[in-house]
Length: 214
Ligand code: AP5
Image (cartoon, rainbow, N blue to C red):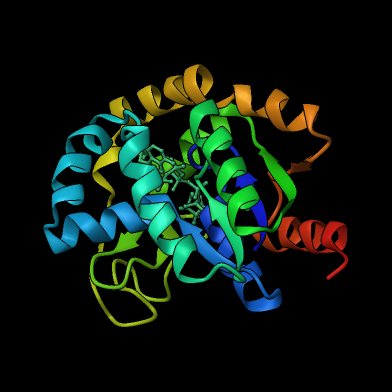
């Protein structure tokens, strides 16, 4: 396995830049948030359990996350993966290290997307997603061609339940409490690369590709 991680607070643009990198590099986009939202939509046991945490902006327990990620990785031990929103706790990071060691492979780089709190709040509160295909827009920054309608499949655009202002504030606190320690974890391993991510997604994508030599 060959992997990279996109690390950063909610709203930093991880998913947006991952969708670009998916087209311009050999890495597959693995978003635990998207996997959980798909599980909720499918009404699976994992989805039902995850929903109560996600709606409040809390993290889903590590065991559930490692279950869905582990299943994905075991299917393709030689895959090239770009993790978005994973790992999110020290325990998840340590378990990922163990999985990589067991199936053989390398964590190549961890990209930290640096964005100020004010911009994060604006990005999350203005985000709209397609109810049917999940495509992501921003009402001002990255609007659809026709207001409220998805460019890809014509589905209606809605706000994510966890993008409401009170939940957004909790998600930022949860990031500081439970995820920000991964910055020093990966710095200590010499894997961290900081990317100033307040400019366009294309600019962030270009910097990441340059660092990867792709
Ligand atoms: P998840 O879906 O992973 O959410 P997140 O990490 O909070 O990240 P976001 O999706 O909010 O933001 P993003 O950085 O991808 O930004 P985006 O590109 O969309 O997780 C949701 C929940 O699931 C968690 O709260 C937790 O409960 C649970 N969960 C998931 N993984 C877990 C795990 N590993 N462990 C435990 N629980 C887990 O961009 C944001 C907005 O900005 C968009 O509107 C976009 O159009 C716009 N935008 C993006 N880039 C730019 C730019 N350069 N300029 C202007 N606008 C931009």
